Image (cartoon, rainbow, N blue to C red; front, side, top):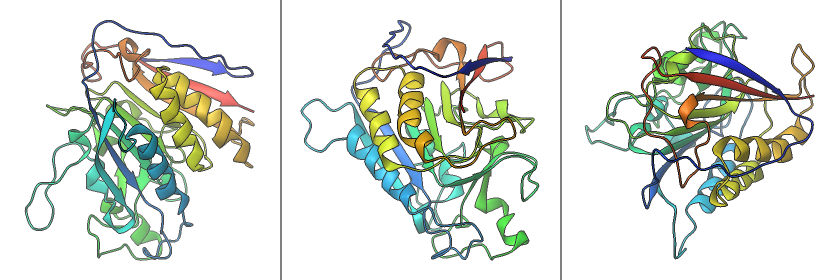
Length: 291
């Protein structure tokens, strides 16, 4: 079962903590999905997020630097705009329209999403938090403007659809640069945890800054824990751009869902694969609140 830890952050110190029950492969696989042209290409009622693609690129540039003599990770996919689909991030390998298998979240150790996101029972009254796409699992078919189009299932990845890490998926960490995807208004948020180590994201609105992802990746390279690296980079680059607050007066809430044994994961030293939620594995939701 999941228990909550509340961290009110006024001063942040970071350290590297190594775990001993698992060791990183020579090359971790990374996949990025970034939606940016919501209105230009998608006829979407929600605003553009062109910087989402920049953020994804910055992350990959630091994680997979070209020509580096000692690479840590390799890029498996970078799906952007019209090529960024909901089913890229669903559990279970998917096939494209011609029947050929293509890489999805199940095929990478670390997946990153950047784009719009909604909390449960927000504007569209979805029963679950979601990642929002202007595509409909196709590069040429976009949802229509208006309520019915925005609510199209294939334009929204709900938390209950993700079920990350299930089966033989190698996915370990998911990073969500989007508003509200880890907001606790979702009654079934735990269902994300089907074998992955950690989901890192936000419980509030968030400001997209490409340097946040670059700095996050740089901290990971240095050996910082995933949680320390994400909170530190978010505080430095996301928090200063925030001009809204939640009902409790928080400008930004960085939220992390993690298996207890994976809490100290780094790129170089991380836990074994957790059991899915409800199978006796202990899970935490850790919230870092910035006023």
